[in-house]
Length: 367
Image 1 (cartoon, helix red, strand yellow):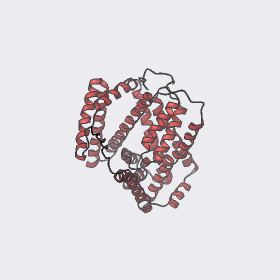
Image 2 (image 1 turned 90 degrees about the vertical axis):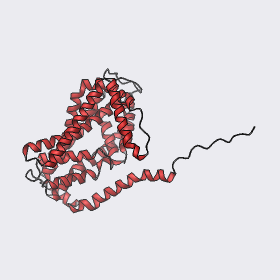
Image 3 (image 1 turned 135 degrees about the horizontal axis):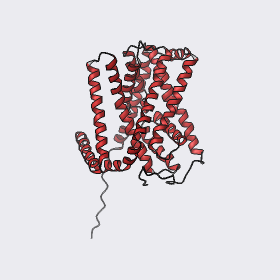
Image 4 (image 1 turned 180 degrees about the vertical axis):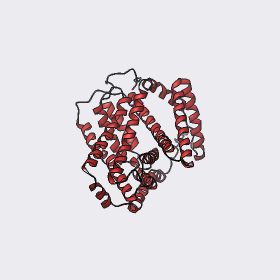
C-alpha cells in the first residue's frame, strides 16, 4: 500500500506584503505629523512666539488655566465610575490616566489600552463582563457626544447670527445622525428580538460595503447586538441620566481649557466668540473618530488652528493657544500616566483575587 504524502497547508500571504500592510499606517501617520509640525505650524507661529504668549499671561490667567486643566483630568474618571459599579474613584484615576498615556503615544494604542483596562480591573477583582459593559457604554456615549456637540454649536450659532447654507446643511445632517443613533439604541434595548434584527441589518450593510474589497460577509452580528443588549439594559435604565451628565461634563470641561487658553493668549471674543470656538472644537473632535495618529496628534492641531483662524482669530495667537491647549490635554497626561502605571505595577494593597469584587445586580456577571 502506497503511503500518501500529507498535503502542505495552504500558503498564506507573502510575508513582505503582510509587513508592508503593517507599515503603511505608521508611515502615513509620520508623514502627516511631519507635514503639520514642520510645514503647517511654522506658517502660523514658532516655539519662541508660543513661549512669549505664555509668559504674557497673568498669574490669574495661569491659575485659571491650571484649575481648568486639573478639573478636566478629574472628569475622565466620572464616566468610568458611573459605568463600572463598585469601582472607586482612585482606581478609575489610575486606569484612565494610564490608558490615556498609552493612547496618546502609541499608534493603535486603543487596542493596547483595552488590554490594560481589562488587566487593571481584573487585578482589582472585577470580572471581564463588568469591564466590557463599562467600555461599551462609555465609548457609545462618547460617540453620541461627538455627534451632539456640532449640532448644539451650530444650533446656537444659528440663533445668534444669520445662518448660512453650509451651517444649516451640517446642522441638519448632525441632527439626523444623532436622532438615528438614539432611535437605534432605543430599539436595541427594547427587546432581544429587535436587537437581533438590528444586528442582522447592520451586518448586511457591512457585508455590502466590504464586498467590493473582496472581503467575506460578516457573521454573528445578531448575536453580538443581542449580547450587548443583555449586558447593558439594566445598567442603562438605572444610570443613563448620570452617564449622560458625566459625559457632557467631560466634553465641556475639555472645551473650557481651549477657551481659557484662547482668552489668556489674547484671542478676544470679538475675534472668535465662545460659540464659534465651540463649533470648531466640536468638528475637530469628530475627526478623532478615525485614529489617523495617536491621540489625534497633528490632526487636532490642524483642524483647530485652521478653523479658529478662519473664524477671525489672530493666526499666531490662535496657534499659540492651540499648542498650549494640546500641551495641557495631550502632553501632560503622558507623564502622569507613566506614574500611575508604575504605581499600579508596584501597589499591592488594592489587589483582589479575580472576580471577587462585590457583585452588582446592574451587570450580569460572567467570566
